[in-house]
Image 1 (tube, helix red, strand yellow):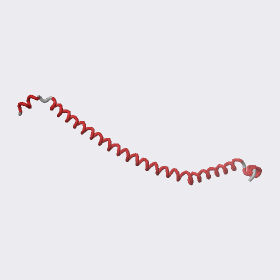
Image 2: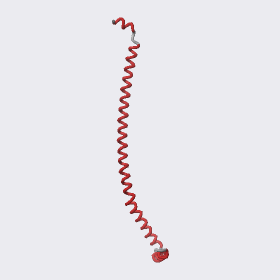
Image 3: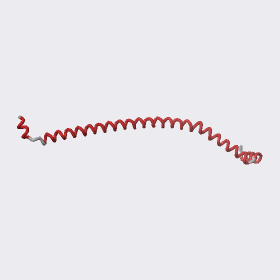
Image 4: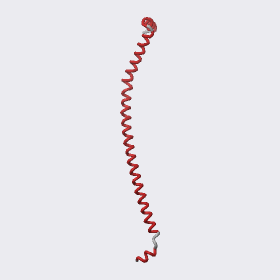
Length: 103
């Protein structure tokens, strides 16, 4: 179709009708492109996103458990250190003369 045929077509049917037909063809082309090309890619990206969200949740749960374990160990270690400090304080502050009397 050359330019003179297109002009004759517009003169015969009118600009609004020809423009509506061209717009309909453009919409059809975009619709088929989106459904055949873009939709599968978006679906695959959505599946990947769901998998990543699940992995992040698992890592978050692991971090929470690890943090609880570290806090427990630090608490127990602190109690042990306090106990050892108290034992050493009693040994250091022990009156040596009492040892001689007990023997």
